[in-house]
Image 1 (cartoon, helix red, strand yellow):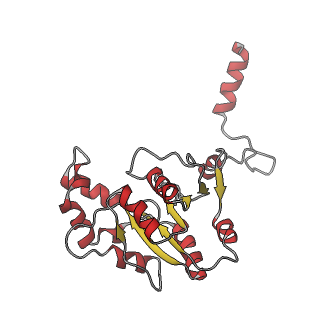
Image 2 (tube, rainbow, N blue to C red; image 1 turned 120 degrees about the vertical axis):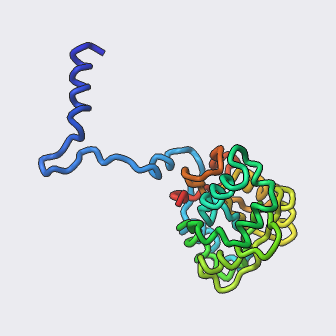
Length: 229
C-alpha cells in the first residue's frame, strides 16, 4: 500500500460511518447471529423442526437443562465462589448440588427463548417431555422440577432426570424410547447419537461460564439458528 493510500484509508476510518443523502448509514452492519449462520453446518429453525414432525404421532422428546433451556451460569458462579473459588471442585461436592437444588437457585436462572418455542411446539403436539441433566441430584428435596414447570408454564411434566454421567444419559434415552434430544454440549449430541435418536443442538450463550465452547455441528447434527438466547 502506498503512503498516500494509507493516509486516505486512515482518514476514512477516522471519519466514521458513511452516510447517504438522507442521513442513513450506507453500511447496514451485521449481527452476531448473521455471522454465525455463515458456518457450514445444518442450520434449522423451530418452525422447520415442527414441519419435519407433521403427520407423526406424539413421541417422547428430551431436553438438557443447563445452557439448553436455562441460562444457569449465575448458580454455578455462586457455587464456585462459595465452595471452590480456585478450581471446579465444587462440581463434585454434594453440598453444592444440595445447596442449589434445595434452595432453588434456579429461580435466578434465565429461561431461553428458544426453549419456550420448542416446548410450546412439543406440548401442542402432545409429546411427552423429559428434562435430562448431567447434574448430580444432591440430598434433600430438589426444586428444579417445579421451577421448570412454572417457568415454561407446562401443564404436565415428568420429574427432572439426574443422570450424573454420560453413560447413564445414553441408557435413559434408550430405555424410554426418546425420538429427539436437544442439548448444547458435545456430550449431549454424542449421547443422542449413541442412543440412535435425533440430536438437535441448541447453541450455548457466549456468556456461559461453561467452557470451552462446544463445536456446533461437529457431529453433523442440526443446529438451531439464533438459539443462544
